[in-house]
Image (cartoon, rainbow over all chains, first blue to last red; front, side, top):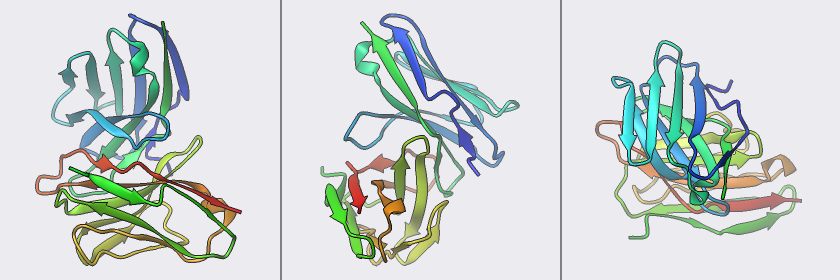
Length: 111
Length: 114
């Protein structure tokens, strides 16, 4: 039972444009959400997070939006750069609970 | 700072063999976990631990054992390797005490079972 879902396996955007990656979750007990970035042959690295008491968190070019009623979050990257090309994982957890991940979305930013 | 260190980086096993994947962290994190990454499946939780002497099962625990005798180490044991356990394994750690923190990952162990 996949509690965190990323339904788009891949996304391709032009350099300078916006990248929007989506994530849905089913467990209403999740109250903290994270995005990780992963390059080939490396471990995932933390990118940005959001608590369930917020609906938006911004860090430079990266913004995460949370819609609790829809159980949906999204990651916006503006402007997209070729170095952003990677696999992006959405994750969710509860306080002291185990962290669950989505299947990932492979982002390709074309120069 | 070494962070989370996994050994080995690559391993080939024959079906039925056993082995231990090592994971060590030097950040004094209470929480540690093991994930496997498979194409189209993302990262799936195998086992996790909220502190020394405490472990619990994740989504896909069958065929794996863990123990946590120290804060620093969290080894993952494959009891009798099967081809279905061919995967990339990641160990992660994070601090607790508040709960809302990111996890730090190791570089991964690529395991092939033939």
